[in-house]
Each structure stands twice: as structure tokens, then as C-alpha cells.
Amino acid sequence: MFLLKVVLLSIRHHLLRFLLAIIGLAVSITSLVYLMSFGEGARSLIRKNARAFNLQILVLPPGQALSVQPILPRQLADSVRALGVGKVYAVLRLPYTGGFPPKAVGVVFGKDFASSLHFLADYSIEKGRDLTDSTRREAVVGSVMARTAGWKIGDTVVIGTGKYVIVGIAKAESPIVDNAIIVPLNLLMEDMGTERILAVAVAPPPERSREVVEILKKRFPNYSVQTSEDLMKLAQSFVAMGDAIRFGLSSIALFVTAVFLFAIMAITVQERRWEFSVLRALGATRWFIFRLVIVQAVAVSVIGWLLGVLLGWGLVEVSGKVMVRVFGLNLLDMSAGIVLLSLLVAIVVGFVGSVFPAVSAVRINIREGLGR
Amino acid sequence: MKTLRAEDLRKIYGKKVKTVAVDGFSYEFMPGKSYAVVGPSGSGKTTLLYLLAGIEVPDEGRVTYGDTVLFSMGDDGRARFRADHFAFVFQQFYLIPYLSALDNVSVSLYLKTGRTDLKRAREILKTLGITDPSKRPYEYSGGEQQRIAIARALITDPEVIFADEPTGNLDSKNSAMIFKILTGIARERRTVIIATHDLDLASTCDVVLHLRDGRLVNT
Picture 1 (tube, rainbow over the protein chains, first blue to last red):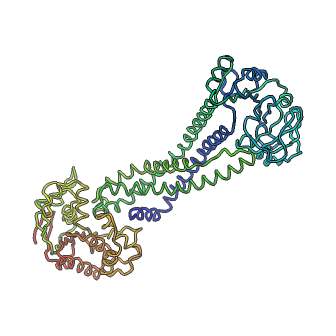
Picture 2 (cartoon, rainbow over the protein chains, first blue to last red):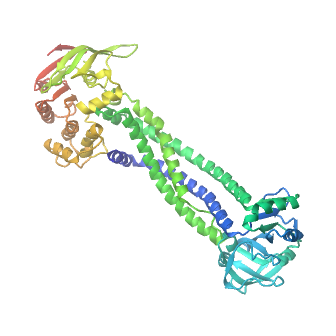
Picture 3 (cartoon, rainbow over the protein chains, first blue to last red):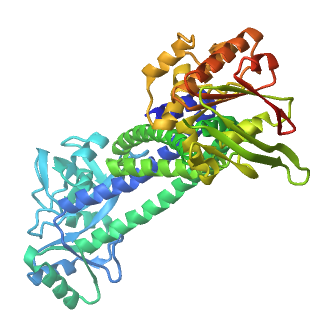
């Protein structure tokens, strides 16, 4: 404790100098926390959606892991259904950006009335009622979408060339469905002027999952058959790739901070040569002097980390609120893992930035340091 | 009773132009006595103190304290030995500027034992006339700062105290007071070795050692 007291009093004594290092650290840690929160938010969204979606197998266009353009014939769903491998759902969705500037951003889903599955993910009706007729131009909107767009029951929503009357507000566990508009599939296809769908989702009895995959692969060799696990892995790998890129970007700032800290610590050690020499003359070992310099740099780093985490947390909170208002989804999630990672990074920066100054402090000749 | 013994110490500085700082110094310092090492500037007083304390390594000769040969130990071994048995008082006081008088005194005990004893630190400071130990060094006069430095030396209960020109930055009144304190400490069965160029003050010590060109010329 006494060592820490000495270190903290020394930081206070050279406050302006160390304040610059603390600010540098705080900015770097803020950027690290903020950027890494994107990955954590995406991971959290994937987890929530994976839990909420009923689909286990997807039949997709050949050679594709994910599909963005509707290029599969609608009849494919009927062909899969005829195999009797489980509940089958024809998937068609498109991005929705309503208003200019956009006041609601989300997804439009087609509801497949031909399926025995209620929908791709479970939802409950919060207000109004569910869709009941595939021929009526009616829509159910997710609660977040309704809130951000300011829609209520009876309002009209325009999708492509079609106009739909909102008959229900849905609440779902899946953030995507909470931010979606659900309309009858056949009417959506009509409005989009297409006879095609994005994918065919299959929810087989759990014990037949593997068997159904094999059946589908054999029956439809020209299509891509993916399990929800495959898709999860794919999504996770995309997020991990993003994490690596974001961490790389943060590392540039952290590297500059480490160099900055190195310069500050080197100057400090130069200035405190006599102090280290006195301590050595009084009986301090080289290890004690080394520790003194390292602990000081790490203490500066930890103070910077604390500030950076607080700033990052504030930024994540504010950005999250803005995102929910604009997109209906919060892509940011500052987990305990990120906080711990940033602490570890701050300690490493403190250590790396001070190890050479600490070695030079250890090597000071006592007599020269005392100027005698 | 442990004695501090120097045997044929020799220290040379410089590679191209060689300066002999200490040349064949031999002497046995006894506990309970105060020693003044006197001589003109450059006579090797400070180097001798640093050699005796194990801060500088001699080119020849050896220093023993009791049965321990100082230079048989490594650098850190000698540092630990200094913390356990020796203490140092400097001309420029060398108090750490951002620590209070109390913390400055606590530093050397922390180096020796890994803990502090604020009560004891306060008592020693009070004995030396420092009643408010919460202030930082620049808030004290030169004489007070040197007394804080002496308190820093005493808190570890050292057997040998080295003082390098302890009155060099003080007026005559404070100088006399510091010498009185240091020679008084010797009476507590400690060895006190003071480098000084003030012959009047040196004469208050039990033994005066005269150095010239690094050689002991007279006692």
C-alpha cells in the first residue's frame, strides 16, 4: 500500500505530464470499448435471434450461404413440404426504410399462410389482432418499429406499390421481428413483382434433424442446404472477423499511446535519477526501482482505463439509444468481457510503455545520479 | 561488537585520464564512536564513504562489516545489507519532494522491512524537533530538512551512519546542531562516519581522519 501511495503522490506531483498520458489512454480505451461493443452487440443479436427463430434448416440458392435476392421458385417450398420432413416456410424478406429522412428502418417479412408454422419466430400480439387472411392488405408491425415510426392501429404503411393497414402490434423475443413489418407473402410478392422467394425454411422434428438434412441434400443437389448451426457459425465468424478488424484499428491508437507513455516515462526517469539513486543508497534493490517505475506507468494506465471505460460506457449508451430510435436495433453491447479485455490491454500498454524506462532507471549509477 | 574494516582500498576513475580517488585506505571503525573524514575538495572523502557503504565497488581492497565481506555480495545483496545495517545522510538532504516529512522518514523503514511505522516515525521526528511532520520538504528550513533526513536514517535503527557533508548547505548554527545530533547518535553504540571540510565541526567527533589525494595521512 505504501508503494502505491508513493506512486500516486508522484503522479500527482507531475500531474500535467501524466494527465496527458491519462487522456491518451482514456481516448484509446474509449475507442477500443466502443468498437468492440459493436461485435458484442452483433453477437448478442445473433444469440437472441437464434433462440427466437424456429427454423433449423434452410434451403438456399445453389452455392450460397446467405441469400439477399429472391431467386428461388416459390414452388420449391411446396416440393419440400411434399417430402413430409417437418414444418416448411417460404421465406421472403426485404429491407424497409420508411420516410425521408428515414424515420423507421427494419425488415418486411412475408407471412406464409400455406405453412403450418405460425411464423419464422414466435411473437405475441400486444395490441389489435394477428393477420388472418392472405388476401387482405393488412400488416402486423413489431412493437419497436411501431414506436420508432410512430404507427398505431389503423395507420397505413406503404411497401413498394402496395398499401397495408396496420391491424396489430407484435411483441417478439427476436429483435429483428420486434423491428419488422409482417404482411401476407403472396401480396408482398405481387407488390414486388416477383414469383420468387429467398429461401425455404424447415423445422423438422428435433430427433430427425440430421436425417432431414441428408434427405434434402439428396433430393435437392442443386441447392445449398444449411443448418441453423452452420448459419450461426458463419455469422459468428463474420463477427469475429469484424472483431479482429476493430481491435486492429484500436491497436493503432493504443500503440501510439504506448509510445507516448514510453516518452513520458523516459523523461520522468531522467528527471528522477537522483531520487532513484537516493533510494538505492538507502537500500532499495534494482527490482524495487524496476517495480516502482512499472507500477507508476500501470497506475497511470489504470486511471486512463477507468476514464476510458466510463467515457466508452457513456458513448455506448448514447449511441445505443440513437440506434434504437433510428434503426430500432441496438448494435452495441458493452459486456463485462470487454471491460476486462480493456483493463488487460491498459495494463499491457502501461507495462510495454515503461519497461525500457524502468530498465534504464535500474541501471542508473548511484554516484552519478547523486551528482557527486 | 561489529566493526567496519577497510583494507587497502583503492578506487580509480577514468579510462584515458586516470584519477586516483582513494589510494590504499585501511582503517577499522569501531561502534560507539564518531569519525570525521576531513580533507580538501577532491581528496576522496565522498568516494571513501561510498566504498565503505558498498555503493561503489573498489578496484582493489576490501570492506568487511563484522564477518561479512561487502563485495562478496552482488549489487542487490549489498543494497539489502545497507538497508539492514547502514544509513546515509546527504549534503543536499535528498528528501523526496512529493512526500511529507513523515512519509520521507517511512521510506527507509519500508525498504528494510516492507512495512511502515508511522508512530515511530513521528516519535523520531519529534525527538529531532520536527513537531508537524505532515508538511512537504520545501515547507521546512534547511536545518529542519537535514533533521528529517537524519530521522530517515535513524528509523531503521542502523549500526553505521554515513553522512556526506551534512552541513554543507547549512548556516553555522544549524551546522553545529546537526553535528551535535550526529555525534550524539554515536554514543548509542553506533558508528557515525561524517565527511566534512569543516575542521572546527570535525573536532567535535571522537576521531578525525585526514585524507589527501585519497590517502589517509593522519588521524
